[in-house]
Each structure stands twice: as C-alpha cells, then as structure tokens.
Image (cartoon, rainbow, N blue to C red):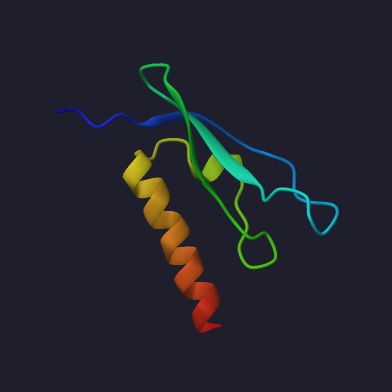
Length: 74
C-alpha cells in the first residue's frame, strides 16, 4: 500500500482571547483528500504550514510529538 504525502497544509488562526479555539493543522493529501490532523497549544509549540508538505500523515503526527517532547524537556 502506498503512503500518501501531504501536498498542502494550512493552520487555523491563533487564539486572540482566552476561550478562542486552539489552532488546527489541516492538510491536503496527494489524492485530494483533506483532513484535520490535530490541534495544539500555541504557547507551547508552533508550526508553519510548509513544515508538513512532503510528509506523510504519520510523519506529521510524529513531528508534533517531537515538538511536544522538546517543550516538556525544556
């Protein structure tokens, strides 16, 4: 089975007020399917959409995990 790569990504706006929703990472795969990967706490970790292009969904989730771990160890 072929693993599809991410061809486009977007991140929803950062919260401006306390109860605004967390930013979410949405991606488009090579086959045109779109999905929301995860949300995150922007005061702990950050992303740019370009970081996800060329990765698989699993690699993108691993990237979040690595950044979470790095934040917790800092």
